[in-house]
Length: 249
Image (cartoon, rainbow, N blue to C red; front, side, top):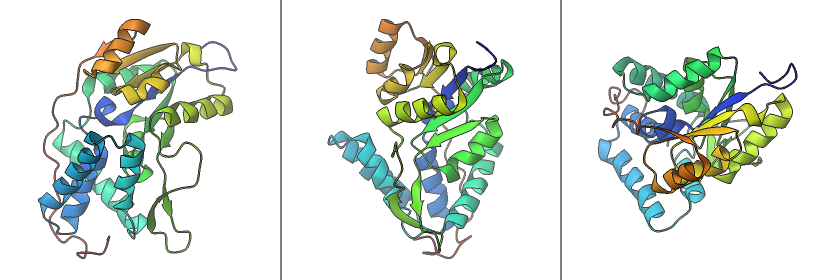
């Protein structure tokens, strides 16, 4: 720790960095299965969003497109299903990228603040935060109606939304100011070139995997590298019709 007033932090991207695979899509498959919807529905949505990226649509806009799928879903039900999904993932094993999880635990033992920074959303990420013992969560925040407590399909009208690219760096800078974090002695982890603004903020950084643009930046800045996560196991799906078909649509 640099002083009694300033503390180092370790910032972690989540999908394909801390975890094997993309939690948003894995939860989508679980949610759809819980409604009794066929597996190809979730596959089709994932392919549609990937096609948007391939066509040149920004990651920010594809992130927004994902959250439109939540329109009308009761927030409490999504949170319950997310907790069920996470328990199923951890019981199956292979959900976390072990070298990164071990690094997180080491930083926590050293007294660093642990901060998860992700384009995913609280319902999916809070079980991850609790499991890892992280201290702070910076993420995309879908809008929820104040009375009915259902998702609107839009994002909350707050700064740094969605939590992609430069928004991650902006949110971290706000957290730094509020919690007296010393960026020079801090470290960040990420797997995609869109994480570069976050990685560039801290005194040291670690890239995860083989993103070619990120590897070039790593070579230039002297960032360390951890191997790519192993392909994740199939999503452990619940029994069909655990909730009424269409109840979350």
